[in-house]
Length: 263
Ligand SMILES: C[S@@+](CC[C@H](N)C(=O)[O-])C[C@H]1O[C@@H](n2cnc3c(N)ncnc32)[C@H](O)[C@@H]1O
Image 1 (tube, rainbow, N blue to C red):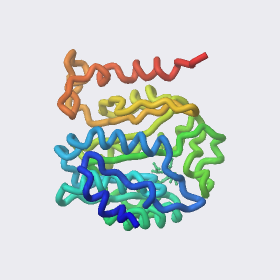
Image 2: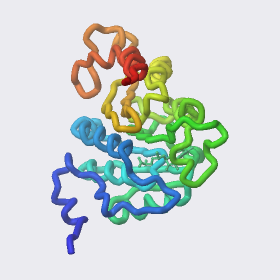
Image 3: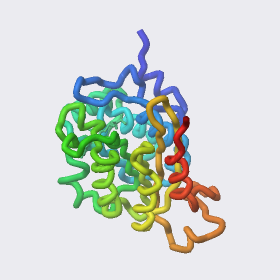
């Protein structure tokens, strides 16, 4: 029999993500899907920069099966003194995440919470890395938060109800050097999300864009714009040290992308 835990430890960190065979399952809990993989791929692609960032606190909101927080803990396992925290509104998701973490031999504090309610004071200005794959599917508003598996996808008008609640609190929990990765689909109007975040003082870029048969996914990355000049500069430099045209024009670029409809 294969010992997947040992095989994982042999992989170089830049290829380490949770092994799907070791991810726990529950009927009420979202199974890792294209959006989960896109988020982990975005984090893996940024791993060298994440190591340089050396986050003290990494937080995943809406951890579901635990696939993302476990992958994050594995890919950053070389870092000392990094604490991993995960929350989910669903008790079953919290239990499932704990099993997934245990199966991969990594640790995180996992709590039942509506976003970060109950730990918001503790986390104020302290989160260096925040990741969220939210319930983003447009539905009637009264389907949001009804519990069961629907909580994993029901997002209300434009799929934005839970996303917008998160945008309200990002500024208060993210540290000055903090980064925020958010999964969105075209229906969420990602360009508008970037504009909202821009007004709060955050720059943005598309970390990953993927089109599946069902949806057009974007993983957006946000960070505090050090100065207003940075966004007006003709040569902006991203936290990864690379000059980025996208960074300047992302809201505009996204509004064009999301209004594109293949015939
Ligand atoms: C699309 S699933 C993502 C699960 C997992 N992170 C992944 O990528 O596979 C969204 C998750 O957010 C959780 N969720 C929904 N509303 C929430 C809220 N207000 N606070 C915390 N978690 C929430 C759901 O229970 C679900 O587990």
